[in-house]
Length: 123
Image (cartoon, rainbow, N blue to C red; front, top):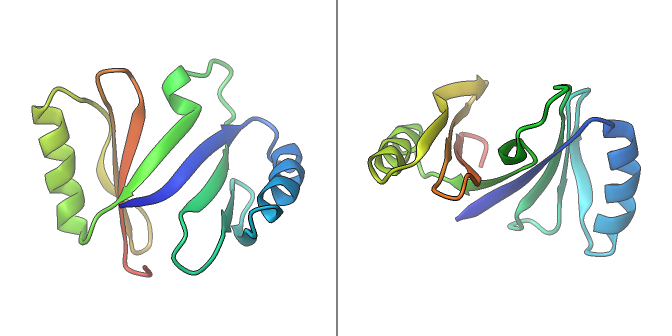
């Protein structure tokens, strides 16, 4: 169900050093890195831990962390997103292709926590 925990940093290089050392204590290894994001994973079926570059001057508290839930299909991303809105959530990102083979949508629930719904053809 939980596929990824996403955190945001204004200093990705500093975050990389910190999380490389911290997450190694859990057996996690860096699995992907770009100029905008770094991803770690512990084990084959573990939850991804990601840190993304955040360049905004003003940071909305809901942008500090995102819990990502894994959908079975790209279509399910849209269904879950629409269900969340019917349940009172607020749109934080309509369903879209965020990169090749990855469908995502975001919403803020009643306490302003940000939830992402993802489907990746690679998973």
